Structure formats: structure tokens, C-alpha cells
Length: 70
Image (cartoon, rainbow, N blue to C red; front, side, top):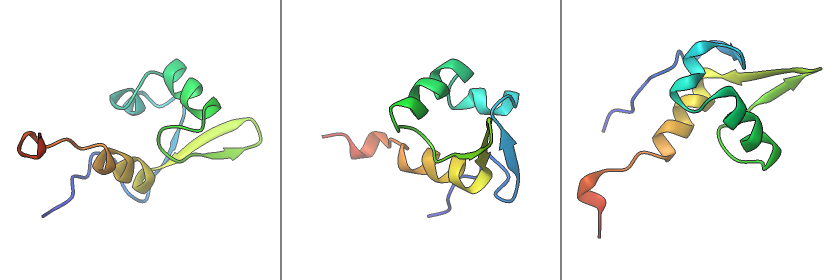
């Protein structure tokens, strides 16, 4: 099965990038980071960054297939 690539694997996304709203709003991502939930992130000083490959992995981990329903 081919994995879905929504984000560029080699790109580093800034928390303010609009593309990240596909996953959740900036406020929701901040709440997730506080609770240690959501996609992996990197903190560089006060800047929050996301690696494209981590975002794609998060999407794949949370993929729901209707045929998997009980």
C-alpha cells in the first residue's frame, strides 16, 4: 500500500505556516504540544518547527479506513 504524502518530507514547516491548518489550527496545535499529543515537533529557542516526514507519519497513523470498522 502506498503512503499518502500531504507534506514535503524534506521540508521544515514553521508553526505559522498555513499548510499546518490541514492538521489543526495553530491554537489547537499549541494545546496538543502542551499535552504532548499530535505530530512530533522541534523547538528551536522559541520557534516551533515540524518536519514534513513527521507530519506525514502522523497523518498515516491517524488514517481511518471504513473497511476497518467493527
